[in-house]
Picture: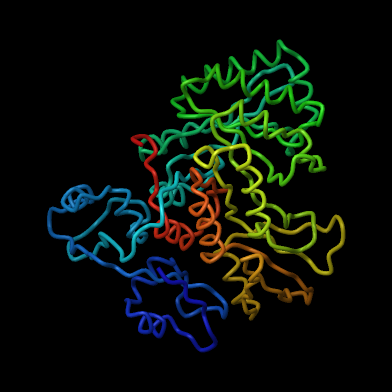
Length: 425
């Protein structure tokens, strides 16, 4: 796999000739909406087929996979133009294998809202080990409030992906430390919620439970760890994961961190997901969402309590578009990779690269003459974070979230790592 950074004067035809691959291959792997609209600084993913199969009359995706002893999911990952579907036709060239070996194996989890576009979900499921619908909520008296996630869990199961039950402290559109405090202060409410989660997770066919309580009060650090330990026993043998803010020291101050005692939490759960993003956030000044030095420090701190095989790295699939100059209360707009590249083209902006943060960004002027600044993710920044997870031998990555299209990011992941199966692994 190579990552080509578009230069002034580059064309897709010229890039294809430079790397000795077909334009069709570049179009498939990058899912470019208009190949004539390349942006200076844009990344083009280049993969090199080592073995291909020309579809014959009577071939199916499963028969081709079986004949080459690869999984149907691997065929779908190798051929993103199929968009996760098994519709192949005579004369079509399918990539069986690319040059180069994966650098390691990762479990891949992704969060998704029940409202996710069905075609996007279908196209991305082959890259996943787990799918986590967002989110079950709860009341202060321990009543469970379910999302309408039946279609997501069924789609996951049909695709051989493990659906994960997600419980969060979301309330009225935001995470509530006060709601968590009320729950943990009431043994009856706590036990009621634990029983409801265990029963619902088993009855719904979930393959694990993920808890994301944010802004936990410092005085609730012990009770929160105890709650998780009790929940772990109740849902066993389903594994329990806790989502953690990217803490970097034991005494780190801040509402995100004060209620998270990693030493206690490591004894209370099976896995931890480190939410290593939102350093650059919608309410703050412009900056990288997930700068690699900060991610590395957070991982290294978490590894002092969690062994690598029990730690997942959270990876963002989003960016932000900020108005300038930055003023408190002037919030950024969330954006995805596809929209960002189109925006850069429309505003005649060149994409830049922050070497230290390992993140792309660019300034531009909008249609009303206002200055703005965008930080986002591309295949380079994902490759850096995936490489970090592989270097440290982590269990996998967890992507927030699946609802934004990012074809070249998923293709890069597939090139760098062997993806652990969901239901059979």
